[in-house]
Amino acid sequence: MRALGWRSATRRLGFLAAFLAAWLALDRLIGSPTPRPGPALLALGVALAILGGAERLVFGRRSPELLRGLGLGRPVSQAVAAAAVVALAVVGAGLLAATALGAALRPRPDWPAVLLGVLLFHGLAEELVWRGFAFAHLRRGRTFRRAALLSTPLIALTHVPLVAEAGPAVGLAAMVVAAVTCASAKTRT
Image 1 (tube, rainbow, N blue to C red):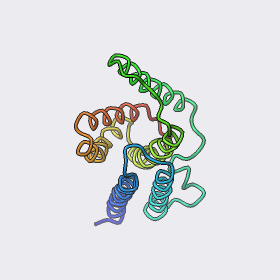
Image 2 (cartoon, helix red, strand yellow):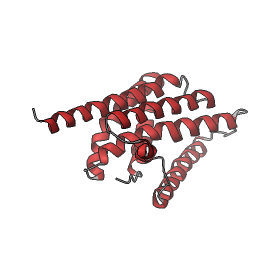
Image 3 (cartoon, rainbow, N blue to C red):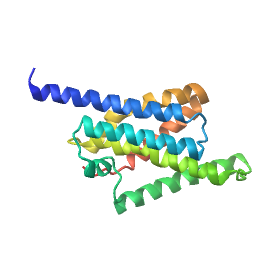
């Protein structure tokens, strides 16, 4: 076996191991559908440590480029605009559905803590794992469409526990939201 082939296989296995370890950490550290700020911050730190270690050990990134390599840099204005449009569409769809169903929407008493927990966990920790690590690595040397196709089994795998715990409707809805927001990603390579 040539050295290049072994190195490529090692990187593929390292990528998969790091992704699964980070995802498992996120899954195990957040015990409820409503992440609290403390556990969400811990999950973000653990995911950053796992993925930072993988970037260093598996992909040979040096410290100055580690954070940039995980997508933690200055945002691209077009990506921020696309994310805002998708976020407004998701929130708008939820509000329309609530209105159509006649549901009364009232904020929870602990909404600031819930908002912070959701931001830390879903907005930062999950995005670090998905866009900053998984999608960025799958995108290198591939078209957007090919990278999105390759990420589909990973998305399905990570939503299996949600389907089992919350039911098929919630699991399917989460997969649709993940697919829509994934389509809005624009990763610099």
